[in-house]
Image 1: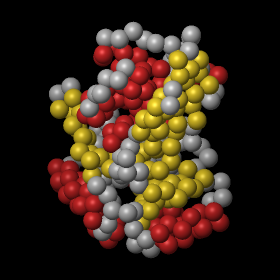
Image 2: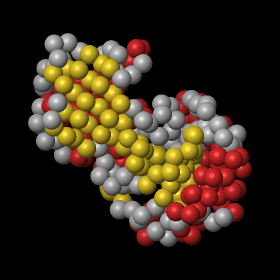
Image 3: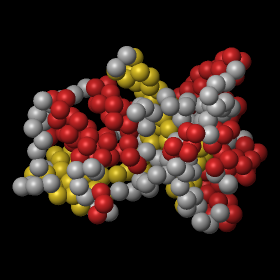
Image 4: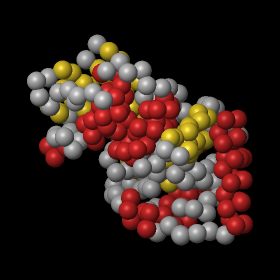
Length: 290
């Protein structure tokens, strides 16, 4: 039996649109066991077939390795909410990639795993941190993904998940076709400063770095609670942003008491928003054999 554990991810991190992502300690678990035919359990019936993203990704690796697709029993124990901005789809793709790599003892390196997952996902900002852990910045170099792990200080985070969904296609439609040269230069400077802050645990630098021109000013209109939560956090001098394309939001602080205070306020102000206190996952997706 092969067990794969994949962390949730927060993509974009405010200023790292489609390139910067962070792994957090909320996990989906997947087990692969030999069977006479494909069996999928632990998910809704409509996903218990060959269109399941885990199976699609497993097949993708089989094709890459020139191997025949085996039959197995796949069991999914999911804790990452679907369509929430925490990389639930990416976790399934990563599980299939990692599961196939383990099944065939292929020993593919991490950059190859990230590239294979990105070929299916379309962009690497969720799959890279899910595989690598911590934070990562990624970009395409011709047909391959180049990812760099960003070592992170001991941050605390609060994941805030509203009880509705934001369609990813809709979230992309609201984005501008272009920005000014001045805004682009500012975006680069803020992103570079954000990465330094993430590494150093510099909360004040992270706070002032969270000035985005590419997606957040437009997507926040799709999240009715965003402005008030954003004001609450920034008034208290710690940052928050939209996770992925939303509607999930994430706040981070180097001080645990800030996150605990925010969590209490959220429970009182927005009881219908599900909140989870998280830390940064350090290891990324993991495989165990039993």
